[in-house]
Image (tube, rainbow, N blue to C red; front, side, top):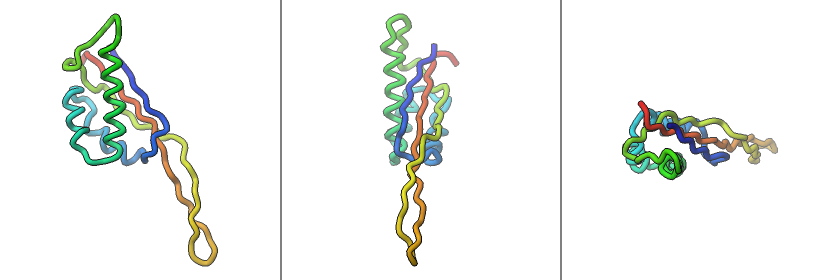
Amino acid sequence: MEKVAITKYVRVSPFKAREVTRLIQGKPAVVAMTIVNLIPRKAARLIEQTLKSAIANAESDDKFAIDRSKLFVKEAVIGEGPTLKRFRPKARGSAGRIRKRTSHIRIVVSDMA
């Protein structure tokens, strides 16, 4: 039984967020929560919210309620969202482009290995 949680348009670079998701893939959900709690990054806080949501989705299902100790993170994917394009003044009247990247976080938890 798989349950999915998706968070869209998160204001964190996908490259930075993927570093955190690599650490939790394939781990039990309880262990993944403690790992994410201990990482001092903005991406870790956002991934923690999505992971909590996926665990809650699995526990609150009417037909197939699953205990959180039996869940594990089947996949944690960070997709690229739209990029906000901004400009900053530079020397001699030119402008430098700033790309503010966004991400889509998708976490799948499952009870089967």
